[in-house]
Length: 289
Image 1 (spheres, helix red, strand yellow):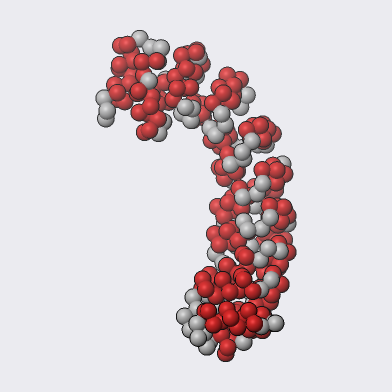
Image 2: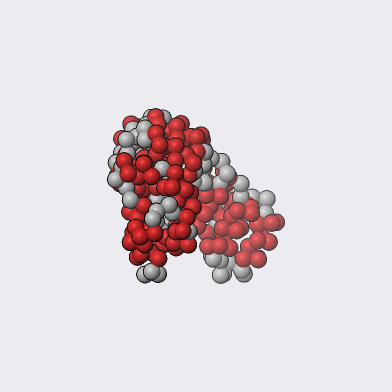
């Protein structure tokens, strides 16, 4: 007997769970793969029945991939959390990245609630990178809610400034990004990294105001994140900014990606510099090296 026979057995049964509960019956069906067995479980069992599967000894020790698939397919967030947090349960052997992936199958509000509960967090084996991935998977509103208590994020979630800047960079709303960066304390270089993801016009305003007192390297990081055409126009219109901060256009171009360096070279005639210094400063980029 094969998968098709098992499917017919399930279709005719009034107690689908009892079919899966009978290990001797299941062994009669040959060629069952993880994929085919999961398909049957997903088609015939509801949320509570899927969770009840793991009360049976032969399902407690079944292939980890199948356990994750079944648990993830449950649509009830409370049941999922119970399975995840059960001591020595069917998800207790998951690695950090697997826990992160599983948490992302929860509704954002449930993920936020879990992240705001120190007692629950202690039971999760999440390293800081997996923790960052979970936070990034929240809705923008929930991310903002969480980051409002930046001390908690750093101390309880074990996220450093670099990882937090990555979370802020992931927020879709530019206004929300800028509000967060203005209101929370982060290392200046990490702030510059996050600001590199806002629009070029917003970067120009930030550079002109320099409310963050960025140093040379941080200013160069923001400048090098600009579109090359915008960068050239900004340079042409704000040469005093470059002079006052001892920044050369060449130093910014050196930090561009190779693709953007080629784009800069294609537009080099638009740069307002005398031909002699222009040739000297950008000979490397224009030579095709």
